Length: 207
Image (tube, rainbow, N blue to C red):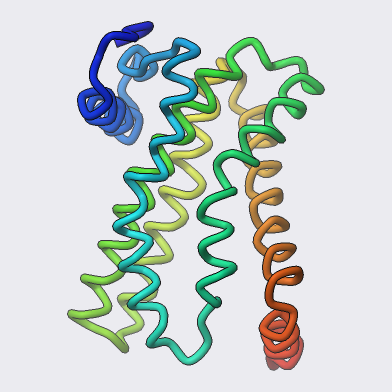
């Protein structure tokens, strides 16, 4: 699908998600399934629209929790995380001298987030409905999060940037730290009261 600018948006989205499934399966030549043109780069931010239904499900379910992140901060992070990550990675990859495949990396990363976000939210809802207080549910969700949030992202960064295994680990750490800091900053700026409450809860955890 590389450089196919005439494809309709729905077909582009479907083919991009199909390419993401190839990444999840660790298929060789996975990047060939994506539109790696400049047009494909900008279209990749339609991944947010694909994530929107799962976001609504997450918010509705999360509102029932004892401590839940406010809608405002969740929504802001949802909207800005992919664009800001792409912006920061532009400068980071230049600094690391690995920016040759910057656009393919952003395209693959955006669609990977769209697919894995839906998988994790739906899996979490199903498991919590079937066994809401089971420790097994927590363990399974943790395993899913580690696999999709670490291993698959590491593989995607490695393949899309065409870098070494160890360098991809460093890029993965940078991306995860950036997103964690971004979430904290958004919560601190837009809902300082909740930030202080969560900070105090974390500080009072038994050692």
